[in-house]
Image 1 (cartoon, rainbow, N blue to C red):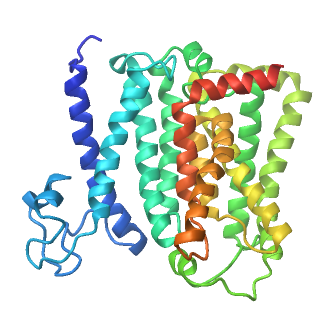
Image 2 (cartoon, rainbow, N blue to C red):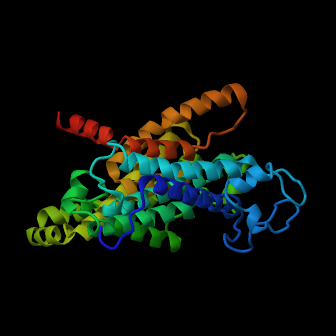
Image 3 (cartoon, one colour):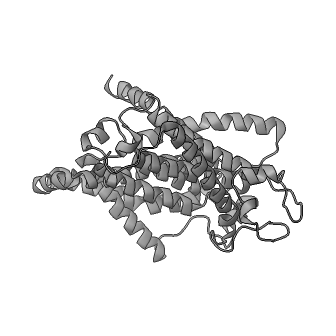
Length: 386
């Protein structure tokens, strides 16, 4: 690639490991501060016990924790092993994703790292790093910060729209590298988007009520027993009302597309411009990712009379859908229970927990689909066309 410095594979792996460790260090800041509504940039790092600022030489990812034996240099208070573990896991994720995508045949069509593959890698590693932070927060506080999910969603939208500047559109579609919508899928996504805007407007205007209204924060609600005076089925009915304009918008848009030939011809030309197709494909992946969890949440609550799954899970899978597309995120959702089952068995015998945080298992399902993408898509094609 002209004008690009090519780093040997071995050196690139070391570089990615170091970058991953640094990102992991920042994720530790996010995990600690974000649920407390603290700034992520100010003040600088300090010991949570003695409050003294941490010097730069005591803040080197991985090494400082080992050299200090997991203790504060000043007050000797114990520093949680989580800091070291998050940094190490993030560094290993950076290296593993690079190795899987560019040094094995597990993911076809990605191409070389310096031949456009770096944008594919960047979008996916941002999602994985973000989901790692989400999982750590969910494990501790039983809450998923929506701001992180929105960040991943935005990355998915931008990455899918910009992908055509790094890959030939036929390669994107042929190997399912980024979401790309057909004209029919694009009109459904566009109609759903109009419906979503209407739903948000009705919510802000007070014409549609939010479910589970409370003055508590999400983390406070997660750490305390949910009030028994909630009629959970009625709360789900509020969410169904919120979703109706989205479904209706998609339905009306599709009907217009089918019944107005002149509009359909224009829409085909417009929606199949690679940038637009990528954007609508990512948007449709977002809707499907949200839908598969939201439907489970609503039906589960109606059946059992208790809140089933959380809205954070809805946003998490919506973000994954914006990056991966509709079919992979659906498969990831159905893979996640297999990861959750092992944790549930562990909790039965060794821990007493009133609920199981599901965000980490959804994230594991997403990662499993990412590294087995070819096999998953081949299986889906077999099932669809047989």
